[in-house]
Image (tube, rainbow, N blue to C red; front, top):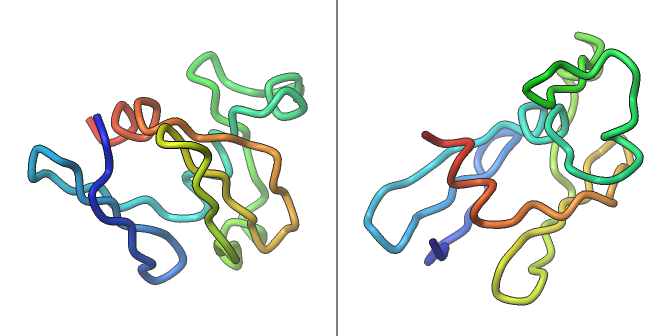
Length: 97
């Protein structure tokens, strides 16, 4: 599934998909599900792959930049300076279901 439009929303992003559906993700939601190797090894990560973030971080987290990775993914730079996760469009689409 390919994204046809990616736009910023308050502390997150909105993706319009080629099938006409759209998904909105907060920065905190994405950061808690970071797929990078370092985050996958964090103790306390849930079986669903969610990293528990402190509420103070979640409340203030935003996306500074979003970079395309080829035609298949996005890489985000979060305000906590984390930037190593590559979020495939397939993964993002699954998050929105």
